[in-house]
Length: 175
Image (cartoon, rainbow, N blue to C red; front, side, top):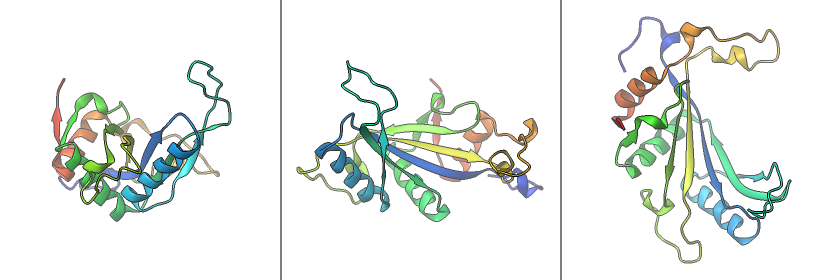
């Protein structure tokens, strides 16, 4: 991306959240946690059901998936390069939201470089959410003197697309 004269206007990846939902606890959930640790090298946290749904056999408070949040800039950049490589550096434009965040899915963890199919684990897909923001966005999250982020400092969808195109060489497909 072209360098802006004000460094506070340069967008950056704030965090990446990787999620695998299995819908049940037990053996499949343990295998999903193993997949996340294989792909990211980090330990995951279990997600719990928020409501009871008898049709899906989900109870409130029961474990239904696992997730991990990545915040290390070097680790995030390498993970995103691998994830975009799996998607052949093509992402549809509808995967970006109005705030400039990016969400996409991967069908199988074995598509990542260096991963091989293990019959004991099986096939697991995952959802990846990338949060993009400018420096100074912390004012909306801090405890003391919390403030709103001004409209001129927020990221738009087009600015986010421009960032990912220039930084990672993504091809954005208009659909």
